[in-house]
Length: 92
Image (cartoon, rainbow, N blue to C red; front, side, top):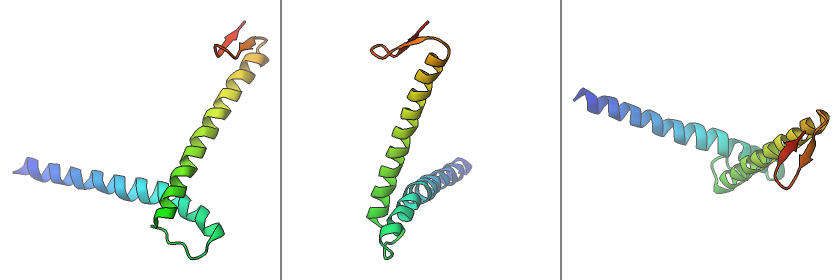
């Protein structure tokens, strides 16, 4: 009996975390803010906000990876090494 209550509470908390925090705040929030720049009548929970939010986070991930790659090449060259772009290895 008590195990069912705990399971239901954890399930509800997990569902709240996924739906409210991840979807609404982290995805639809930036999407809404970006859409709001171009269209003042956009709704915060519309499909356009969700799509733009996903695209925003994909762009953030791509830019983060690009900056990481640039910094690793730069650190190799600054330390006097030679960066091999074919194998992505710093040769010293």
